[in-house]
Amino acid sequence: MLTSFWHWYVIIITVATILACFWLLRWTKGVSNRDEEGGGTGTTGHVWDEDLVELNNPLPRWWLQLFYITIAFAFIYLALFGGLGNIGGVLGWTQEGQYETEMKTASEAQEAIFARYRQMDNESLITDADANATGQRLFANSCAMCHGSDARGARSFPNLTDSDWLYGDGFDTVMQTISNGRAGVMPVMVAGLDDSAIAELVVYVQSLSGSQINADMAAKGKKNFDILCVACHGADGSGNQALGAPRLNDDIWLYGGEPETITKTITEGRNGNMPAHKDLLSEDRRRLIAAYVLSLSK
Image (tube, rainbow, N blue to C red; front, top):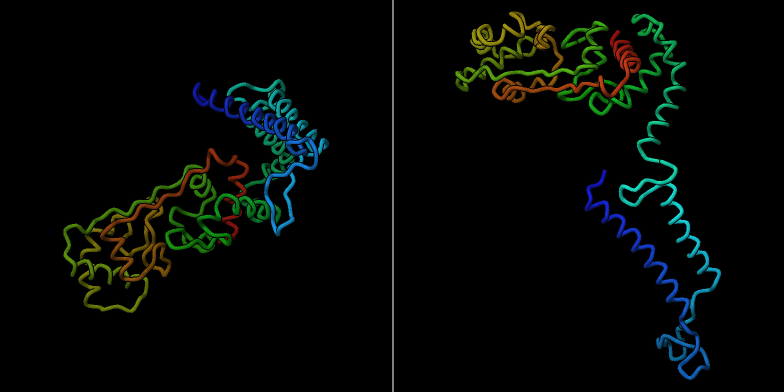
């Protein structure tokens, strides 16, 4: 709702504008097409090419009447639908009410579709072609801006089409991710290491994924890895889905596997955020999206 100031501001500006249009029409209606002596044709005094004169004739009557009709329409519209600050129209129409009505109509139309999927178990939902088609459309509307239209993600956004899962690929787990979101944190754990030790740790992390590296540096880096990193990523770099700690012993990288990127991750940490959609999407829609996502990797 508008405050008292803006309430009157809107009323004054709206009414003044309509009345100004009315005054302008009345003024132009009185323009004479005669000169001061009462004869001939009135002009504006503008002449081009010696004899091309601009006349000063009033607007045609039919044209003026159309303008009067629009002014009358404006007042009728304001009376019926509102628009003068906080003053409502006699019909009681509001934008919020219109939105709620349209959403209710859409929900009733979609109920028959969702009712069918609601009766299906999770595994059947994953393999159902119609459910996946619907889930794909919902995914495109709610998830594609981060994970891409093909769900293959991008740097810092997980690829949902492979078999690598930060928190697990159980249906309930994916539903929890969609509903409540996730907050992934990679803390800075190397504050006490010098640049040489950090470089060795980076090389060892690369070695876990099968990259060609300096064996001596990797051996030195493993010592610090065993002290600082195994609690989350495991002794063999297999990760921990309970914590959302990614696997390091494959060739899948969320932020990139280049030495510079790994160094930044280790020295500055990472803060990933998957927003919660519980208040944005109904449970039926979340189930269809979860089923569609799981169908991509299975």
